[in-house]
Image (cartoon, rainbow, N blue to C red):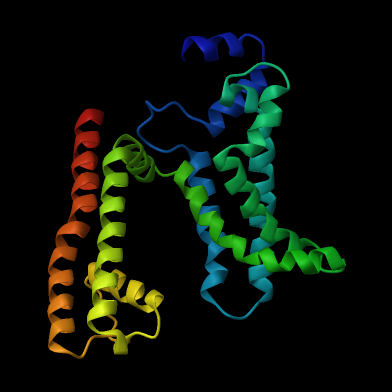
Length: 250
């Protein structure tokens, strides 16, 4: 417990601090607690219906239960917002809904609204946001130690990763510009050239758009070879950071 948290702890109810520690266990704990396990299972169960096209009654019942748990989790985290944000007074409760994970939590709850009540026209409109169920996957970031490590690595190496992204973007643009002028008959517009350069950079090559002239094929080969090196850079940065993080934990 740091100094700021200790000061806040003195001004909150003991039950609130216990709830906060249930939601946010200390980083020193290497194994997930029961609450994290329950929430991870809930997240997995809640996205399971997305694997099917039809809507079935058992899936709706599961959505009732998962939505209820998500609402309780959101309410408890809002209730302990002063400890989470380490701020006194109503400022913490006003600021919490605008934090990144709170927004993810809210977007995860919204699809369940269309299940809870289908009689109002408003909810029929809100049904359009059922696709937000995919945001429930991002809730797992809070409960997975491995994902937490990766997010720390990305935050620590963000400057290097941003530089790699810029290199990739510039390389895609230059490759698209070259191929669009070398072989314009194979592309209806410049966006298709951008699409081709992207799949060539990643060495995927779907085959729906491809050059047919020798010069265009040479450009494709060069783009694919250099693409391997460009794509390998972020993978190497994240892999090295992951290994260093594991060594530090040990």
